[in-house]
Length: 406
Image 1 (cartoon, rainbow, N blue to C red):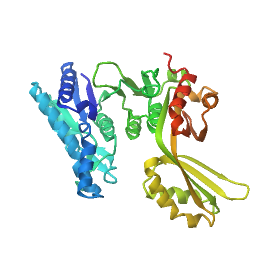
Image 2: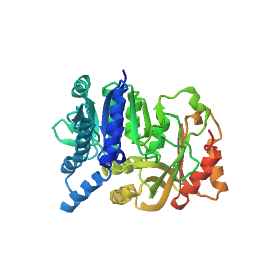
Image 3: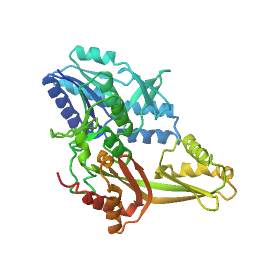
């Protein structure tokens, strides 16, 4: 008998018919001799609707109360799903994040999982119930509700799988798995049967929207094997697990794109070498995540530092850095560039295959696509391009590595 955690996203439970479809899937899994825990998102569109209601009441709703409001979306889903399972003649029990034992810390709307005491869930499993847990939420030590940020239900599912020692965690979504590139951009993109945690994490952080990055980090830390698959069919998906030697045969496993990027450059810096610390601390205090960083010092001794971020954070970054400019030198100034996108190629095979960067930039050059900032890791190469070129860039790089072939 296996213990399986299944996570269903908002599109999978977006209507009553789809909720009934999920109920049947959970029942079929239990009838096959498995114990089943489901982690459920709010119905598609509900979270945005709740945020809209909050902003109708006031421009800047308190984040504590916003968490209380947003958590009701998942509670609606789990109750309706348990009703559907019960209507089909099977036992089900719903659990809010707090009832499931998910303890959190950190800021409201951006909570982080601290510990999980899954005793109540395990007792219900022992009683023959299908356990249905609310994703995206937990409870802080003071009893207040925390939500876990966008995509937080993925994290809830992986963490619950670790807590109950599940044999596998199945992440059900509206796609058949993880593809070599977004099929809407590259028509001949293929589904990848197996990925390593490192590859999935790099793809998630580089623009792939299939999984939340934090959830992949958690899976790697606790060795939770998970599968990304489609809730609307029974096709096998993409298994994500520890790296093995066979994964190195391909230099590149996938191409990811991320739109809505902006570049910020601070130039004319004459402050001491601590200027990097000053800049990054100012951005951290403004809770801005940055991606690529490039710094250099010219022959005249003036330093220059550039970094990229999501376009939505550009205004906050400008506000935070303008206050800092006097500390960076009399000639320090701020420059920004919007209308950018990021292209990334990912593969653990980069460790043992040479010439990957040459192939990437050769393909882009041949297509007449100019590149900007470049960042690399052991298994990833990323570059910025003009937003209008990103789809062509993805197609030519995908073709250069023959990712359309089995």
